[in-house]
Length: 157
Image 1: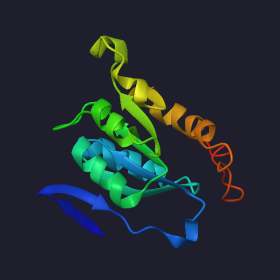
Image 2: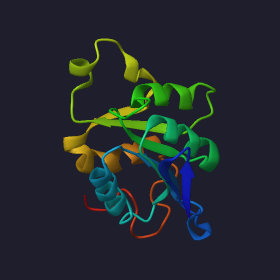
Image 3: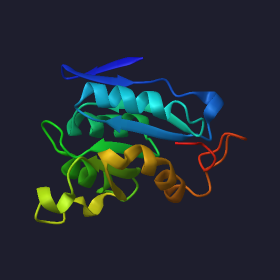
């Protein structure tokens, strides 16, 4: 179900009742191609369910308020509000979702201060497909492998 916020394209998907134990994810990336590839790849993992997508930090905040995801996978470089600031705002009340920030750059090369400290994990985009599933399994140990034979731990990357 499309959801448009203040003229920006934001997609909110209907929550699937058949996958209630799946880890509910909001994807955030301003690059449409990266967002589509990650969406398609995550869809192959039955323990993961994409419930929303956003293309800016501001849109990510709105999606988190509306959808209450378990996990946000967000690019660092976003228009309007970057991933660091969006993460801090998502986490400010202490009850927000886990956040994985992703970037093509090493964090210390881009930012001299510790802006990414609010994120649960920071992954480089060039290793994302190798590291994402093991990372999600570590973040959600009691929920990994809830969908039978095709668990997060067993899924080939």
